[in-house]
Length: 120
Image (tube, rainbow, N blue to C red; front, side):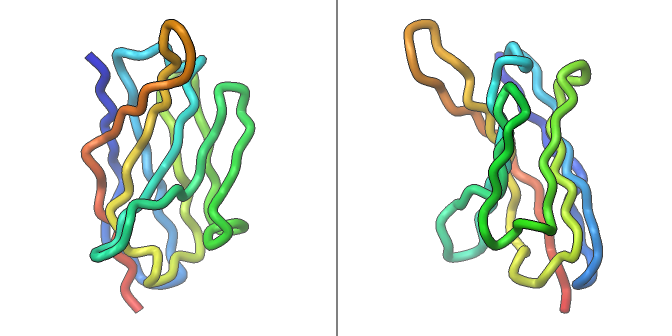
């Protein structure tokens, strides 16, 4: 079955850095678009960054220039490098896989989430 296992969250001071990892199994990783979402208390889940199977990336305006998403197809892992962290980046971060289906479209799978807390 599909599994997405996140790691790398934690507590960091404002201005610090963290790198999140998401290891995937049960999917053909190389053809799957991957993304990172986050959900802060009382707020909706929002897209942070995404990377296509071809390596094209897009970012939420709030993280542009600070966060970098990347992927290693050989390791079936997607990363989120987070620099210059701000208290408003505090949230649970979720890995997402948009797995192509047989006929058309994609099916979303989610990891269990990893907590990122940025102290001021």
